[in-house]
Structure formats: structure tokens, C-alpha cells
Length: 339
Image (cartoon, rainbow, N blue to C red; front, top):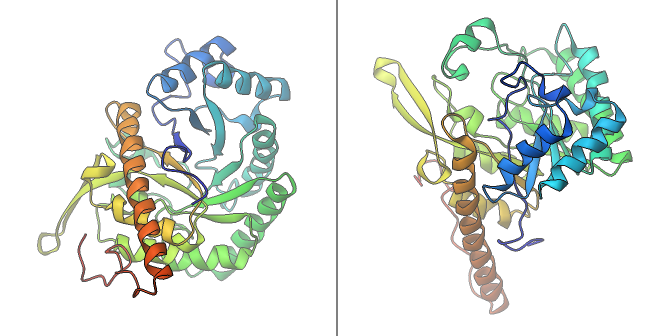
């Protein structure tokens, strides 16, 4: 393991921080003191690492001096802007794809200047009018990338490779966030895409939380992780309770702490570590005090990492003594096994 359970970088997401402040000022245009206050609230919950989400501040649109100001504000509060996330600016959007590609390139440059190490992007597009009206936006259909459009898939590969090469030239990693109804919406499509891109600094962000919350039939989360974790270099983690009654056509999901939802992250983390995962975790949670729940999730992750470390140590000892193979974990075993 590259890190210990205590030192593994686990970042706070910034889902709870809006782009528009109470006085109508854009967070983008706020003064440095406002930024320091935001980062200080994150630090108060015990986080040191922070993922800068462009739903809060679009660093790719900041002047260079302001990027330096943002980095200084984060560090003044005792936090480190270790990664950046671009959301709903798909580089293959049929209307704004070229514009989004330019913005993503600017964000690559700003990510380097900020001192971050990872940029996360995806193909999800802006919320529809109906999605914006819902309590939970995932309860109604969003935009769809045509799954059988091979020309568009090839464009996705081409543009991701272009961004990935730019990131590599600056010593950055690029990660691709899984999200429903895009070319990163299933395990098979995600693995195919990252394989065709073929760059060592480009991997997957296996955010299966995005997939299990849908109010419709879903793929098995264990199978999805078994296929995608070998390609993962970064990981948004969140969980949901889920109930299904297919006979009635009923599917529901609600946000839950990592320890209490459908996905068994103790097993998932163990499998990830056994496969050599060394990426950062980012704690996300929708609703309520999402930052406080994320802090609870951070401590749960550290316990899960300690458990994984113990498993790896026992396997190493067993292997050194010529013992048999370790028992497979539920997250990668037959789908008939329940966690």
C-alpha cells in the first residue's frame, strides 16, 4: 500500500457550497476572505484535502492571479486543493462540446497552477428543466449519449486522449467519472473507453453511487466494481439505501452514509486495495449536512482501509508460508453472493 490508513488522501467534495452566495455574489467573484471562510468550514470537520468542484468555482475561467489567490485561501485555512472536478461540461455535448473542450483544457492548466494532482471529468450534461424541479434530480430522465453511435464514441475517445495528453504533459492524472446514460454509464462501456484512450495517466472514477440511485432497474454494483476497479485511479464515494419491487415497477433510493447504504464499501475498498488501487477518495453526500456526513464517511473509510491493510498483510504472510489462495471477497465473487 502506497499510504497507510491514517495518511490515505480522503478529500471533501464541495457539493454543499453553492455558486451563488446569499447576497447574490458569485463564488467565482468573491473576495479571498470569503474563500478562506469556505475552506475553514471544511477544515472544521477534519478534512485537509479538498476537491475543487466547478459547480462552486470554475477555476478554468479564473484569471491566473485569482487561481493563485484561491490556492492561498485554501492553504490559509489549513486545507489542500488536491484535485479538481469538472461537471456537466461534456466535451462531446452535441451543442457545446467544442466550447467545453476548450474550457477543459483551460482547467487542466489551472489545475496545475493550483497545485492539484488530479482532474476529474465526465460526459454528463446540464440538468434538464424537469430535473432541476425535482427534490432529487436523478429521479427523472436526463440527457442521453446514444449508446450505438460509434462515431460519437470515437469522438469521445479522441477528445479524452487529447485532454489526457495535455494533463500528462503537466504531470497530472485525468480520471473519468461514471454516470448513467453516458459512455461512462456501464462497466463495459467505461472499460472500453479508457482502454481505447490508452494513456497511463487516464483512469476511471468508479462512482457507482451515481448508478445505484436511479429509480429504475440497475446493473449489479458488485459486477460493476469488479470490472472497473482494475482501471480506477480516483474514487468518488457515496451511498444510497435502495428498495425494489419489480412486480409493481417500484424502484426508490435515498442518500445514506457509506456504512448504511446498498454498497458494501468495506468489501469494495478491500478489493480495490488488493487490485493495487492507490488513488484518492472523495466523500460526497447529497442532502442535509452533507459535509458532516462526509466527515463521518471519512472515518469509516479509514477503518475500511485498516481492514484492507490487515487482509493484505495476512495474505502476504500466507503466501510466504506457501498457504492456499485467500478466500474471494463478496464484492468480486459470484453475483449470487450478497454482501
